[in-house]
Image (cartoon, rainbow, N blue to C red):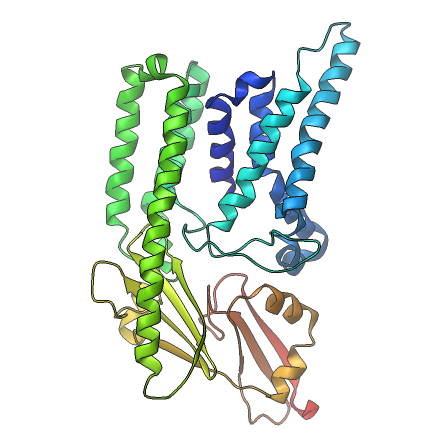
Length: 390
């Protein structure tokens, strides 16, 4: 998930009661909830391929979570102890309280990241297997609304904080309503999201005006966290239905050709819990399509952006070319090794298989993009190859 979500979760668990565990517990919760993404700093030293290689790695594993959960409160406690000695005062911080708050907040990070289709490697450093929850889109405005509204009610007790929340809320509202998200693969009709967002923002403003926070207190944070859990459970049930529909559709699709389904995935899309991007890999090809819950059980929509839908079939087929020597040569590129180690549905395409001089081998992870000029984001790679290498 994005770091705004992680920050809101850390703040919400603190306001749900952990802030009473020790002074600075709230700060520890927010830091611990985000700490796992420190692995992104690897990109400063090796670029985007190094970041892709290490992200969602050891810091997101069970081992890394425990280490971070212990390290963060230890640093805060020692720093506070040093400051207290310098001021010749006794330290008010309680290490056990900071440790408890940190471990809980740190655990929320890999748990949330598991829920989306990017995946987490829980078992590092002993096992590199990826785990995918496929329930929540990597950016979920509904979670922003539930948790953001709750912590706004509980922390807007001063004019400066109200101004800060108003600024943040306005910026996020502009992002939700006007960002060009229609270019995201699989994005559907976002009008229901926009209506819910506006109604939610207005609702929280009214609740703040009537000072519900003074009467409900920590119950607001507990209720928001409970709503997020219930929401995730509903999406888990929706995922199960979508996966079954995708399996039925794939089997119907490949029946004439006699292909065998090897792997399947039904993945959430941005802002529309009814719309699921599906990828089916067979022994000969990889198929990509969209199923919409509440309609016909078979796919009728393209995963491409809406502006391209008139030019793209509802079901996309990517033919495999096993044993291609140009692909085998391109795979030796260190960047390709990293992308293929990350990709859940890797696909390679040779730009010109009958080349004489040089050509390009195009790699992509079909969860997010496709090879060629339509490729988007950091999940594709073009590797020049000398045709004479054959």
